[in-house]
Length: 257
Image (tube, rainbow, N blue to C red; front, top):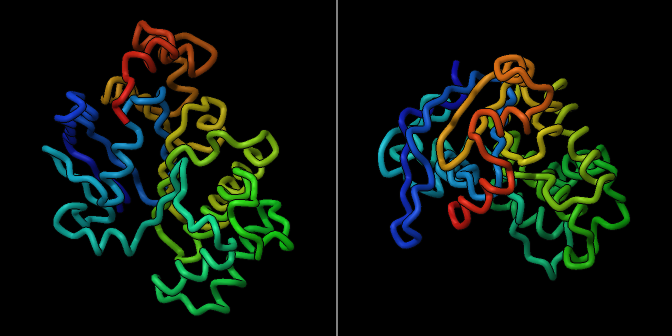
């Protein structure tokens, strides 16, 4: 069964006069970790928002486990959860108070939610003594770990990770990456990961799509992409396939995401 199927997705933001996505067409089988790499503004977050039912594509279709994201948004939402680069929290409340609030929304018993989130946080190196401290007193890395725990205690079968390690310190970044890697080994969850960290994508993802200017320019396993373009790293693949430096593409795409 396919976890994600997108057919000719297009999205245009008229106010910004920007084509955010153009002719996006791909399939993600159940259990795969699918990575999308591209510079800031390339369309990664727009695609994630469409898959999570927060945006409607102008044309084309997207399904999550056969449920159309436009026609059956509630069915899709029951199967997914999402972690974004800037997770939304009540910053004056503690990590547990935020998670308890989310548990009530999802109908998860309080005791079960606390035990599960503590176990997830512990596996990412989150100190238990900080669990009841206000979010505003926690580091960016700790807050992102709380966001990941919040996304997983509902046991989603599709996890959408939108640049989950951007801005984290090296230790927190590795702890989050190790947790994602371990999650894949222990479960059959499907993961879609967007990032502009080439090494992260190559380590965590079964296949990788390179996106630029709102469109996919290559999709394959990391080694096959490098072989195809005759280079040794994914950034060189990007430059060969687009004829542009990474930074140049970010400047061209300013305002797209």
